[in-house]
Length: 224
Image 1 (cartoon, rainbow, N blue to C red):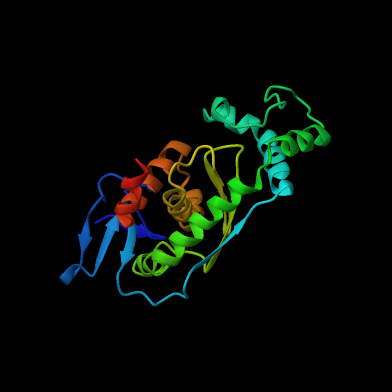
Image 2 (cartoon, rainbow, N blue to C red):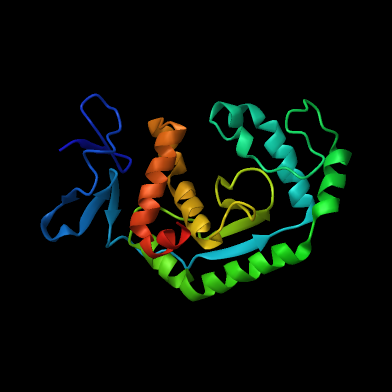
């Protein structure tokens, strides 16, 4: 059996092997299994109950656009650039855009009712299944955070995350907000190990999508 390092299987060359370990089980009684090489232990210690906090404001939208513009080179490199969302009046190809221009563009489009509706939807869903999500993570080895800040936006990519516990949801590109939250939670749980193994962006997204589907199939299927 390949060596297990930091919860991942690597082959004899030391390269992460995500295919040959898929679905592999080990040990008598199958108390443990592997999903894409990540060890899942059903008998690990309990974690505290997870919680979410939803954030939205004009200022967070201004910051979202500013940060997205700063990362334009990365988005071009990975094929996301043309799918970025910006408010009217913001030219994604303009090299320098004054903050005042960004602020005026946000003010013209900002509708607090859209954000409040999404916040209510997320909090309602979490109230119904938050315990289940906590239990599912508890039975895995994908170490979650106790609390998450969920920032709502209409700009940038469809969804993103920042270590250790921030998730950004795009209301324009996330038809199922809760499924996207779960996807980004898995991203955050795996990010440090994924970085250490040097996975490409494509490999990372494929891995996270597969693990999210295996952990939360009923929610992911609703998204599609």
